[in-house]
Image (tube, rainbow, N blue to C red):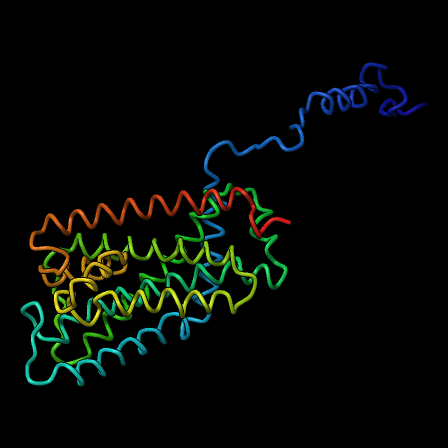
Length: 301
């Protein structure tokens, strides 16, 4: 007696169902055209992944990227306070240590924001891993946002470490008169230098190029921005030159957040105008960096 469950005895319609369904399922699946983007909005997951990658990269060597700048900048405070702060010298109505501390904090933030952004693409080009930034499904804006976000994160961490280090020095008071100015100018300055660093890493072809920008552009603009003095002590010609330096407005505006006074102008409105000016400058520079990234200049073969 034959087995009734044998597949050869099943009705023809049942035997052929799997074979007839599979081709229809495959043919019904519509594959996108080559080059047709499938992520039509912000790729938040990809943006977050790249941001975390960059944060973890500098955090693995936090002794070099966060704590070393804090110690180095604290040495600036010690040296200048000992050299120029003797005899109870006051600047803008406060002792010299309290005057110079905010400028050193934001200067350290900006320099480290530049260093972080300037390393990213350049290291990729030299090591041949630039494709890791270009292959993921990220738009130029998302790529730029992740890189700038990581650099600003490093700047904020350095700023917090510097604040803690400054408080260890006798005579330094960091009570805030205008917290909004501290936040705004700190972030605006960090974003500004992050954008410059990213642009520098796109342009540079070797580490010497980045070092040249750091030594001959960033360092002079930082040190000649009124960090250790008020520009009213300068000759009129040098005052005019100082007012063309964006670093001056960041450092003086940041200091205004702590002291409530500034050498930008005689009124608080002058500081507000400087804040709006830095925001506009960041927006313009961001547009330039975005267009350079979109063009693929020096990063796409």
